[in-house]
Amino acid sequence: MKFQSTKIIELGSCAFRQWKANHSHCQYIHGYRLIAKFWFSCNELDDKNWVVDFGGLKELKNILEKQFDHTFCVAADDPLIAYFKTLHDLGAVDLRIMEKGVGIERTAEWCFEQADKHIKNITNNRCCVDKVEVWEHDKNSALYTAEKKGCCKDKPKTDNLVHTTVAAPAPEIQEAVISPGGLIDNTPLKNNPTAAPVGNKVSSGFSNLFGGTSWGS
Image (cartoon, rainbow, N blue to C red; front, side, top):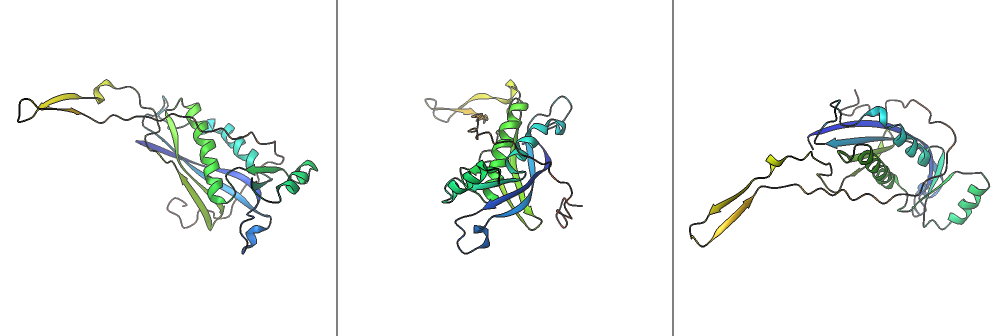
């Protein structure tokens, strides 16, 4: 991609349970205050010379907060899920069921899928999400990166395609030479179920989250 921009979004304070962590305290319900960084990529800037309009990301922020702000995320195959559903029905937890499982890596993947779908929609496929990094705290994070490059739509340019014929030494043999042309995969991502509404607003402030990093100063 020719251009990139980044945005950091606070996801909220979320509780998890990694039931497969038999030898770790992560098998118990525990929580993190999640923060995510998004990389947006494109080949052509918009009419304001932006990759994406940061002011137009409020809907994306709402989607992310609805999933993670003051909620309880569990894997779809958690053996105690029936009990957690009961607690949800009783109003004790705001349950979110993660179909692919829990863990900071799956959280980064979920955020990527939601953000990429949203960004492609609001930019008419001009822009896509290149990668997402999610922090549990200032020492632990995970990244999810786009599997395919060239996910953004270029403006049609006829001068980008050159078709020539080159004669080989033997007159009866000719070789067609075509310059590379990018094929774009705009297949939409599978939609995730809409999560239930959440309550309180995300708290602000995080002490020296990015201290010591190349872009934290």
